[in-house]
Amino acid sequence: MLGGKSQFVGETTVIQYDEAGNDDYALITDFDTTEDVIQLGGSKSDYRLDSSPIGLPSGTGIFLGNELTAIVQGSLELDLSASYFEGSEG
Image (cartoon, rainbow, N blue to C red; front, side, top):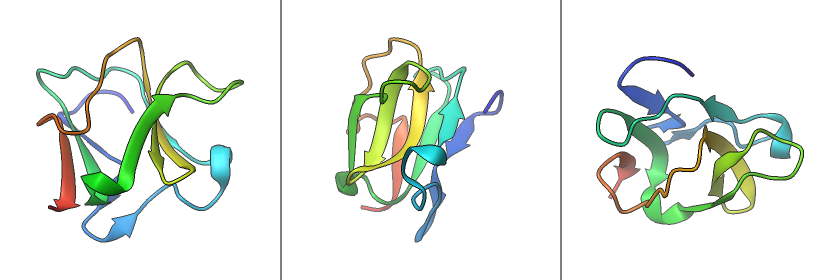
């Protein structure tokens, strides 16, 4: 995903990229924590951040449970409680 201010991993109650394990995920290549927002479907508390899986592009993996939903490329120190992450529920 390039350009734009918002990167969507999900909208409202629809969770995207959550059906095929590591075979379907959003790849966010130019994320800027001072300008961009990642919209998560559901509550931010349902997600966790970890390293991207071996064999996939390097970066921070965004997981819904054990399901990879997105990779933010680069060596950013991301925090789910920060304002650049928005959940559709609380």
